[in-house]
Image (cartoon, helix red, strand yellow):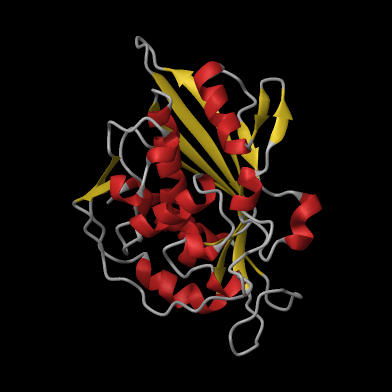
Length: 282
């Protein structure tokens, strides 16, 4: 069993056993047939993944790690808000006729701000601080910009990263840790997708700055299982599990903007069968 499997199983059991139902409340999401999409939810879920030990990919079912990485590069490296720059169709429902999702996600990453060191966007600011001021407690990003929410086709779910550097005992090696803040998460559809994305981001940032990847802490304000997902989750968490796969990035790349999907290497990823046609509430 991978650590990601154990964390996922424990989280799902906790939500199912101790969560609060939203049935009867006025909820925004709807199913395709127009009925309200209710959930069982837990507030303030915190999961920790030690990237020094293993890569946090679920083995209960397959996570599309390369597709998740492609979306991460779309937001953090290409800094794009247009689906024509993305190699999957997961954002199609939120794009307009030009392919734009509005002032969301990658758009916020490329907006430049004035700092004492000059004009930089959020990604370049993080890279600058990790290289020049790694022990700063101010290395973070935020794409939940209230002034632009009315021009976003979807409000950001995973909205903030905080980076923190530690020095290993008896070593000159610096370790990059990070906290991912997420306001809301559909546990079945998105949990491990987000985990592998931001684990890869930590690896990218660390490798670009001469560090090693450390801990990823995932904070979810509203972790929920939709009513129509409950039987799928119950079946999923009873499945056989397997060891975590070996995942790494091409080691000689030190330029954050040089990574491509082809630089992501995955070995020995054994999983249970995929769950097909998961209903998605919108």
